Length: 154
Image 1 (cartoon, rainbow, N blue to C red):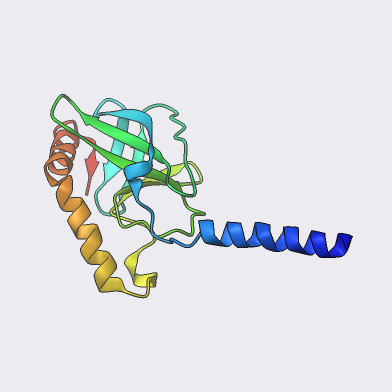
Image 2: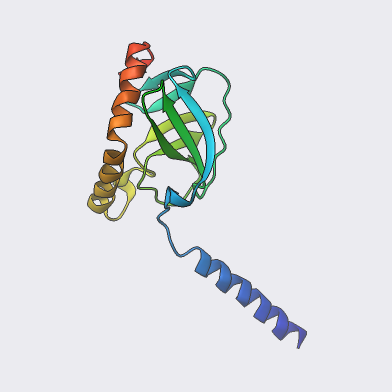
């Protein structure tokens, strides 16, 4: 009797956990408000090729494997955009802009992981392009302000 109850309990927990994890694509609309980065003051450099971003001071940004943390980039009184903050150990597909943390290095990507490793590259890239278009004006201002401040590497 005890073995049956224990087996039932284990199967129930497994089933609940499985049902809760059935969506591999993350939506940042439910993310919590996180840290604010002032552009260009808080940024030491941004490499437009590698997408690595280096912060001026030792900024520790909260990361979440599920992407429930957000980072807002405020651009010198000229707009803002918000990205999800994720860890490099995440196994969830993000088709929205992200700040990826990888061993105290940070990268601003249009999504995660790279589309080359995904089954449907075209659909995922189209969704990423649509999401980048939503922040296109702020992204252009971001690059312009960093370039004017001498903090944009190409």
